[in-house]
Image (tube, rainbow, N blue to C red; front, top):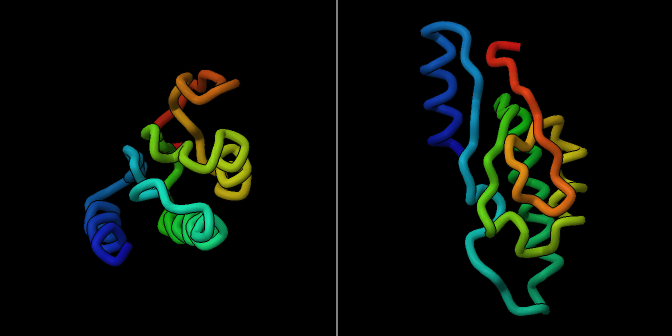
Length: 100
C-alpha cells in the first residue's frame, strides 16, 4: 500500500490522475476455511485503504472472487469504485469517463 500511495502521489503532482487497479488486489491465494474470516477482514481493509488513496476503477482477477461474487460485490459497494469488467457474475458494463 505504501508503494502504491507514493506512486499515486507522484503522478497527481504532475496533473489530473485516474487510478485504475488491475487485479489481483484483494486476495493473494486461496486459504483454508479457518482463515476465511481473517482474509475477508484483510480484503475489506485493503479496499478501504485503496479507496482513501483515490482508486476509482478496478479490473478484477479471478482471485477477487475467491470468497464468492457476493462478497466481492459487497466490498465494491463500500468502496465507491467502478468495476470495469463484465466477467463478474451478474456484472454490468460501465462507461467510465476518465477525470471525473
